[in-house]
Length: 298
Image 1: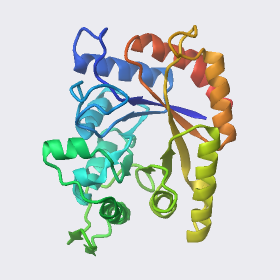
Image 2 (image 1 turned 45 degrees about the vertical axis):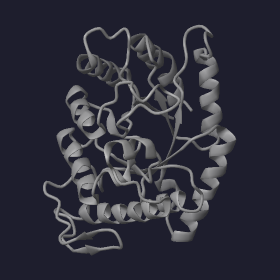
Image 3 (image 1 turned 180 degrees about the vertical axis):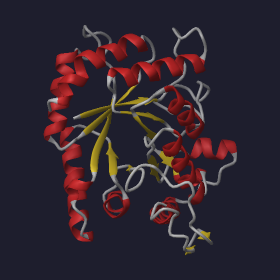
Image 4 (image 1 turned 135 degrees about the horizontal axis):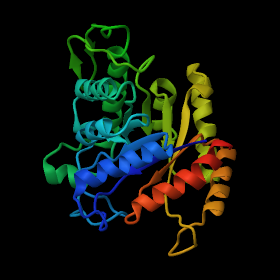
């Protein structure tokens, strides 16, 4: 099992040197500790469950470029991007740029989005859900076109929501056959079908029983479209609340590894942990010394 890190907050009270230096330091430590991937959210306000909207939040693609310069081995991506925030060609160009500048470590994480509050607050259109799913599929089709061959297909594309005259992409991405595409969400009729048709990874929430059910649905979609199920990496986002002792809802490392084993039995291949609100350096060391080596054996 692989272990990733989601940096979903920037309000660390013990980071007295500011957001930029602290973020670079934490990313380097996670990279050196063996985290397989580092992700940031694609939000402009902090989301419910993690803090008030007024808490610090950085724009995702800019942050990933910063992280590319601060790290050397972990794969980087958005978990996951909101499709309506950017035009399809910009999605692919930004992911390509990240891949090129990071030496082949970029990913395209994308989904149909949900945060109407921040969209309306900052002036983004927020189309109905069915329309956002249509936009997502057209964006995924364009991504496949722009990542085909040494310069993209260079063909035109005409969909319901997007018209593109030439799917040119130079420089082409380093990752082969393309930067991994992750589609986030567990919707059984639309989201997982898009995963089966276009994605290299999925990200679904929940515990072992829930994700096992979602993966069974995904396998059915793969069979229906003629896609090998084994081609798709199965990821799962989990709270990273753990410590050497059980405190304030945190889990002791051995108990946490047992939880990971149950997730592995359900089919999860890559668990992504949210960064804690404080004690980040000690937490990264704990994950690197106790969790990652145990996860490798699962």
